[in-house]
Image (cartoon, rainbow, N blue to C red; front, side, top):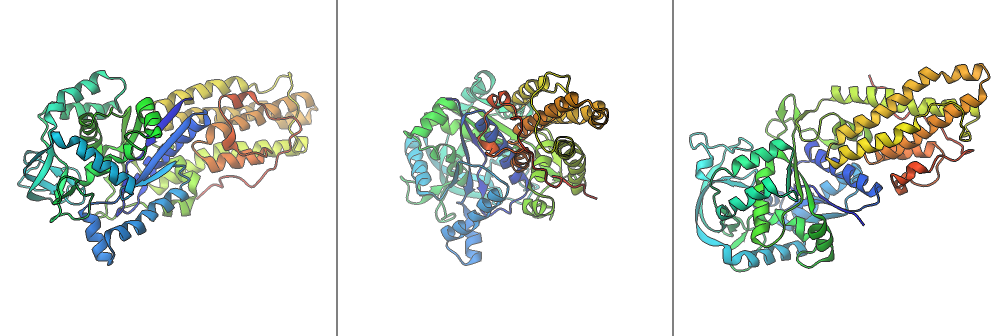
Length: 508
């Protein structure tokens, strides 16, 4: 049995959800659905990061204990994922008892390698990230990641030495096919980081400065640094060290992490070294995608340009939102979000192409054949069937490479070919001329194309695909179909279609 373990980053529980959060998770959901459709066992992990000084401050401002505040605000992401149709297998919270226990076990395992020392560093509270003195221009004192003001801190903490692992990590990235960083541009960024000596990684915080965190088991005066804590969710969710899921999905299968490009340092430098130091194999792949920009700028609270997924879904619908995010930008590159671009995609691809194919096919079946699927015929028809396996192979190759936008392009080639065939074959002329056998053969092939399109579409736009499946007269759920076997199960002759209003009305 093939397996697939896919993770999103943990989303900071005090964050205001935006389309960047939705993007990563919708891509993960699409890939998970595609692997399930292929008959694989899938474990899709997402969740919330709930420790750190920011949470304690926000909780105090809200008049709540930190845990109560986290309980309340984590529900925001759960509710959003439900609205976006995210089919996760586990939603982890870093305040889960099982996760906290794993963090402490890893700390105990690393204890002989840790060093206690005084640490002077630059610290960005919004990013919960520390930087060495040589990584920040002291004359500006702004965060290299978010460009907000940062402060210089001096404290006594525990450190994990990174430098002694630098050559190992460099070799892993360059030569080990089981640890891949994609796209190539991110891999090159990480290798460039490894050309310089790596500073020690601070993995604790003094309780007198940051009290809300996982207790360090061998030091009463320290809690765990939030980034060290959060990264361990990928193995704690599987029951490390001896859980069956850990063996199946981490040791045998290998994890695929989807992250934003702004956290590759944490996932491609710190994380594999933490694992190596603890005697755990690295993940199989880290794919660091780009940002969604608004008017050319990255979204941020300070700029007031946050795009909220719920608002977009309420205005335009879930599947149009999913389609735009998945189709408009190659995964890995930056994209620009605008309502104008979204409306253009809805009208051109969903209303004109897909919606038109569905509506006109069902209309012709109703008008010429009383809504009944004709028997399969050897008469000259559309012969689109020869394109089904070709499209499937293209989509398989693209989705295996984490390129959902290219997979959708391949699917739309089939959709457009089906639409073009209607103009070329002119079924209305076949009906007028009494060429019944040819008309039935054509409409059968067109119905088959629509059946296959719904199968291929389901991982991306599950609600729309199920609606097409239902209108084609199928009783069961499309989600139960498995590819490529389903390609060999043609639509039954005599099945009655049930046409509904157009899927995607054009927008002005």
